[in-house]
Length: 142
Image (cartoon, rainbow, N blue to C red; front, side, top):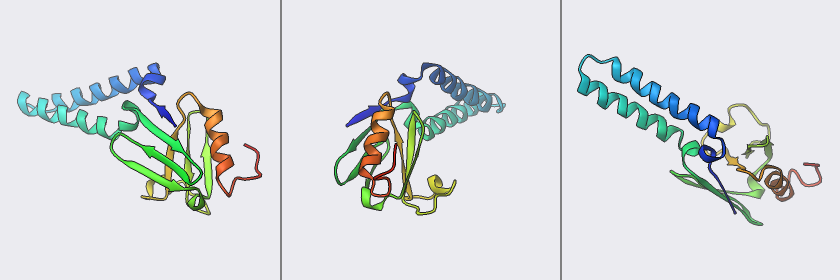
């Protein structure tokens, strides 16, 4: 089991993300003539941005066992069996486990068609572990 928290792991990106959320909120707030409406709408915009970026701002936990992989995100929990997974695209920071036999750039947008995995500081180790468990990756070099 491991935890990934990109906000803490990538301080430069964290500062940029926080600045972007604040700037967007200020831009929305100043676009209204009524200050109260502007503050409420700007604050609402910042909340929506923070919620949509919850996987970056809040820690997520992952667990791998012989049956599959489980992700506990800030706003949901997702479990996938190794037997359902067909592909694994990744880099040093994370990856995407896909159920599709023919991967597409749209896989991540289709609900239930895969899982994003954040590696935290354990990139290579986790990627190798996932490759060992996936039936479609066994025998392939990681």
